[in-house]
Image (cartoon, rainbow, N blue to C red):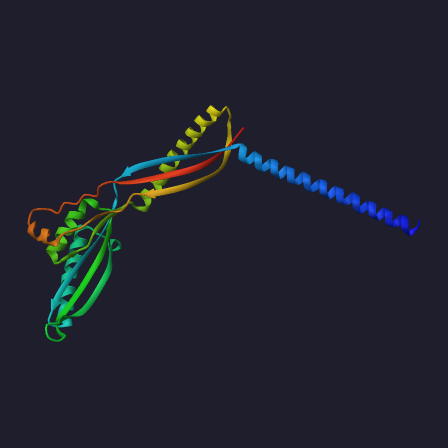
Length: 249
């Protein structure tokens, strides 16, 4: 075979191979385009929503003692004695060690700035953060703490415990999915199509704001005696929304 015939055959082979590759590429592109169009045209997306009003089951508050004295040691000792009495009273109410956590301790000088900076005494502070689910004991916690020597009560906040949040999440998710499914079924029926499956879904949760209360020591002192400090946890709204994409045909 001549060199010229070999070159011709190689040339035609290259041409044939190129044609095959072009056809394969065109076929793959057409399939991908058809698949993309099918995914777009054969799905519907629908949102679902659910919410519940809940009464918080957990309270957090700060109870502290602040005293001033001539020396740092006197202030510290007096503060320690009063705070020990407060802690003992809290335990007598039924609070556990795990429900009480020291949040702040300090001893610092008190200055007089009239003519020149001079130390006139020392202030000692100690406070504990209380986190409890015994909401029915909140009034007693505050009243007996102040009676034992506490003179600082921080803001009280109410929240939902992890256990309650878990149960709420499951309930709300089921309700939101049912809501989305119901809407999708109604839409599919109107369009004359049938839902065949679920493609994707996304979830968004929203908890109502934490509820805060201020405790006024002046009012507490006026209301000392048989009057109990009123505490109400109120309600909070917890909601969930889902976005679900359904296959249809």
